[in-house]
Amino acid sequence: MSPRPAPGDRPSFRDPLAERRADPHITRHTDGRYYFTASVPSYDRIVLRSSRTLNGLATAGESVIWTRHAIGDMGAHIWAPELHHADGAWYVHFAAAPADDVWRIRIWVLENTHPDPLRGTWTEKGRIATAWDTFSLDAHTFTHRGERYLAWAQQEPGQDANTGIFLSRMADPWTLEGPQIRLSAPEYAWERVGFAVNEGPAVVRRNGRVFMTYSASATDANYCMGLLTADEGSDLMDPASWTKSPEPVFASSAATGQYGPGHNSFTVGDDGRTDVLVYHARPYEEITGDPLDDPNRHTHVQPFGWRADGTPDFGTPGNP
Image 1 (tube, rainbow, N blue to C red):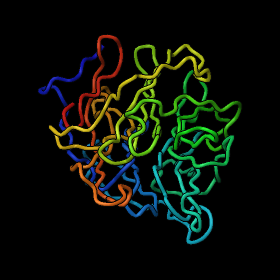
Image 2: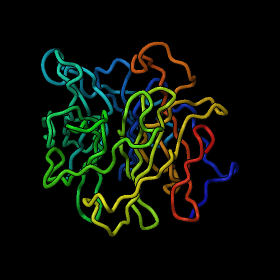
Image 3: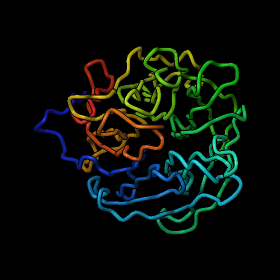
Image 4: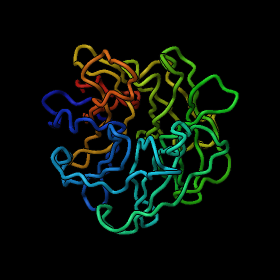
């Protein structure tokens, strides 16, 4: 069991790692390189950086690997890309809306069969078909016990919520198969500030359990992270396998000046052992106008540890 790192033991990361990059996703591939993608303030493209070190992502060149369509599908609100390697190819799952209906947001997939995702050709594999044709975004894919899953956020018909968290097995990286279950809906007051939202799922496994973080409430200073937990031997497709923490596990901190932390992902430090939380936050609390129009959600990374009961200890934003 590794406790939360003591100050003298913490790796030193640039803070912020990347300015004006929201919904960050960092993965360390088997080639030893880190790959970083995120939402850009113009919401019109997908960008990618690569580095041998985590800190190196801060100064790495950034490539545009795909740009929104001028008309039709995938023409607006290009949000929350995630890069994953599966079945010998690279995939980006992201959210997008038609150019003429910008809130009709759905999940789309790109594929690149080149070993280097910064080279080769990205092709459009199409939209992921979910049980309902409703607002959906924030797709996160992971494998567990030989099965590939997709977790995502979606508006469920008949529910008094903007989005809940859903889970399904996958036939391939762009196709769901079997049932689609709801793991979580906004039920606590801290999940319903501004908007009733559960979104941005991310999975980390440790200590015999599967932990799924998610983000809740409006994308201002009220944005925060919740936690779902399942035993690693349980049926992940059974909602009863999952328990939900009644309090947020990561929230705004006036002491460190980081507000609205969330939409996280997980990676490891350069040593291959240090668990690292990747998230975005703003450096101020008050926002003028729509938070989505405010560009200053910056990417941060910080190490985290594990409590004696086996649960993750994320600390506070800016103070791991």
